[in-house]
Amino acid sequence: MQIKMQIKSIGIDLGKNTFHLVALGVHSQVVIRKKFSRQQLLAYTANLPSCPIGGNVSPSHTRRPMRGVPQFPP
Image (tube, rainbow, N blue to C red):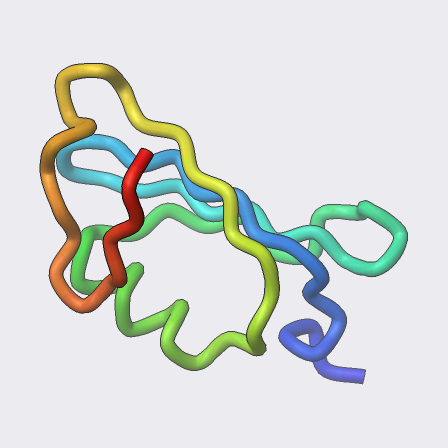
């Protein structure tokens, strides 16, 4: 089975210049752990299956929107 099909949830650490993505599988094991630039992250996540995504940002970057990603109120 492909790794991308095993993904059940994704966590993203949103930094100023780099973004760290960790994807968990059906048994909460890490199936993907990668570091991306903003453009790389958008391109990579566009091809992933639909699943819950959680994010973490530092307080100084909470007002910086990511183009192409829907923005929801806090």
